[in-house]
Image (cartoon, rainbow, N blue to C red; front, side, top):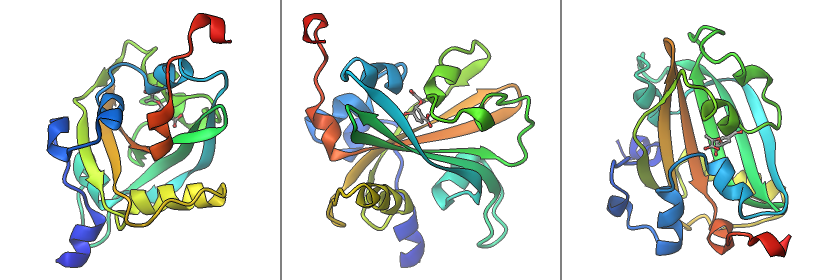
Length: 200
Ligand SMILES: C=C(O[C@@H]1C=C(C(=O)O)C=C[C@H]1O)C(=O)O
C-alpha cells in the first residue's frame, strides 16, 4: 500500500488544501493561459519539448481520465513533456496526456505541436471545454516530481529530492476527446515579475 501512495498525490479542488507559499499560490490559481501569463513576464519565452511519445498513463492520470486499470496495467496514452522557459530559466514542468483511444479529430493539432505552446491551441479553440483546476503538493517520490527534477538536472539545475513541488492539473474536453494537463511549478517561477512596457 505504501508503494502505491508514493506514486500518487492527493488532488484538491481548493488551493488552500495544499498550503502553498503565497508566491506560488497566485501561479497555481491563475486563470486563462499559463503561456500568456509567462510571456508577460519574460522577454523570451520558450516551450522546450522533452518528449512526445506513446506511454502508459501515470496512476494519478489514469484515474483523472477515467481510464480503466487492469491490475497494474494502466491505459496507454500519448504523453507530452515540456519545460516552459522564461528568459531561458525553466519555470514550469508540464506533462500532458491524451488517451490512445482518442480520435485524431479530437485533438488535431496535438501531435504536430513541436515547440508551439499547447495553450495557444486550447485557449484559441471554441470547441474546447476546460474543467476545474485541481491542486496537489508533490512529494519527491511522485513520478512527476522525479521527472521534473531529472529534467532540471539535465539542464544542470539541481533541486533537493525532499523539496515539495506544487502542481495543478486541468482536464480539457473537445468533441469526444479528453486531454489532461499537469503543470508542476518550479521554484524559479516565484521570482518572475510582470515586464513593464518600458523595460523591453
Ligand atoms: C495549457 C497551456 O499550455 C501550456 C503549454 C504546454 C505545452 O506546450 O506542452 C503545456 C502546459 C501549459 O503550461 C497554457 O498555456 O495554459
